[in-house]
Length: 67
Length: 269
Figure 1 (cartoon, rainbow over the protein chains, first blue to last red):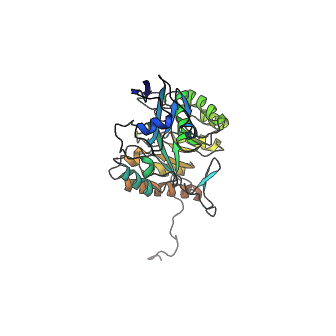
Figure 2 (cartoon, each protein chain N blue to C red):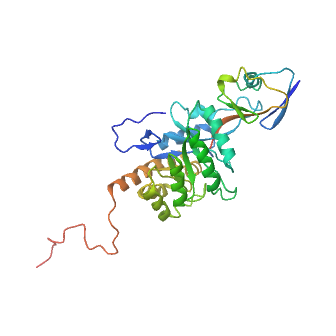
Figure 3 (cartoon, rainbow over the protein chains, first blue to last red):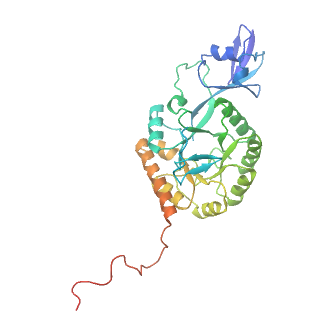
């Protein structure tokens, strides 16, 4: 069991997972997102290989309407 | 985004990119993405600002995406740092934006001073601009209408300086045309009036002052008919630009030069 903070929300996961796995689990696959783990950007090319650890703080962002 | 053919002599050049439209528009405050899309199309704009925010994480899986309405293949997206109150948050936001948009480097930096006025914090803005320019970003920077700060931001390497006409979202129009004129006179990079435009005449006045472009969101999005206002703004920016290029007549207290002939009047002896 690992615990992650995602966009300020605490979530628990049964299995260790990669950033790419997290994106799928959250229903965000196919969407244009950017992901930061503990303040560092995880480039798209590294989403598969970057495995998340218990306590990681994740930010996942999208483009929204703004001026 | 669509590159502008070079046969148009009056293109807007920003950071080595050329654009035929001198109106930049935001995508906030619309009732839905269909309206956003229609207004953006009516505006004729090529550079479109977007904000970067946390996604919903499964609460609303079928939420539509702004980028489906405003695709990066068709428009030059300009990610902003709206809502950032310090340099670190602004830099972090734009690094995420660069990742989100596949290495895109043209960005709008704005670091705000307080939530009531949304007035720019120029000290933090300068700090963020230095970091971003070093990091390879092409920074279009929102700032106050202080000519010294505008010049400093240019000297740091920002590709456009974007002084406010009045407070963000206020619709108060151009409060200090004199400062804008000083900024325009001194600048070697494009000057874009950003924030405060309320209606078409404000945009035309900005362009007649010699601004290179105008950036707006609220004036269009909160008009009764946003699509019609977008069209009005397009024309206003074009009209103002043409008037500036044409060179206005001097102002005279009395007209000593009637437009019609003074001879050949009927009924004379």
